[in-house]
Image (cartoon, rainbow, N blue to C red; front, side, top):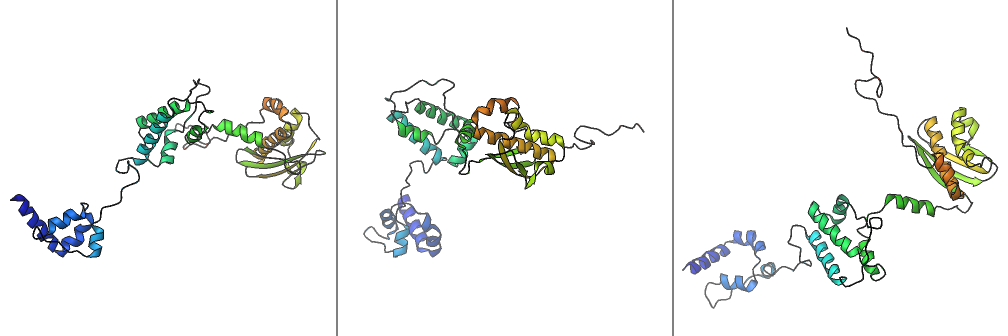
Length: 299
């Protein structure tokens, strides 16, 4: 009884054109079942237009089995890591101490790469599985470690040392480097010569009038006993005279390291290799300067 009433209701709804145009795109049941249900009698075959039949065709199956989950990218990654764990579970492993342990990308960086927001426990699950896979000896599974490199965190200090080691003299035997101090940036070229130095096309004496700043610029040559052995061309921008002098000294020190890496201990002792990150402290509201207060008057 209730089944016949439902069939009649469906038939009446289908005969109304508004129902066809508004709801036909939401039908996902097989085409044969709909045609059988909409027939007026058991032996009758319902005739529909070609475009209506195309709409009633079943939809394509998604490529990923995690398509209908809340986080398909995260679930696909877990499935892939589980498959790798199963594949390499019988491979030779090596114990990693605290010094040789791999550093994985931080949670916020991994979220950007995956394009999905991760909870802390989800991030922990991923890193534990990565640690388990990282224990496999690289020689036995090089393709696995190539995959793990996508999740490894780049050590900034190590990358900086590799970049410094790759710096070489150019075709004219010049060493190029960039020095910085406060707001000043100095582009420095150093080549073996008679000791000439030009800053923005002017000699050192004309560009730097104060003796204090000249001594600061020449300090890298003084601590390495190389005065008069190199010619220097400098292009400096930004900042004041003091900041430019510090930037030039920083750039010259880095160029001398390219010419002779053995000079590093002397330059390190003089604190010329590392950039001086000190800056002028900002003025505070209600104060005369950064920390100086106005004279207090009672009345």
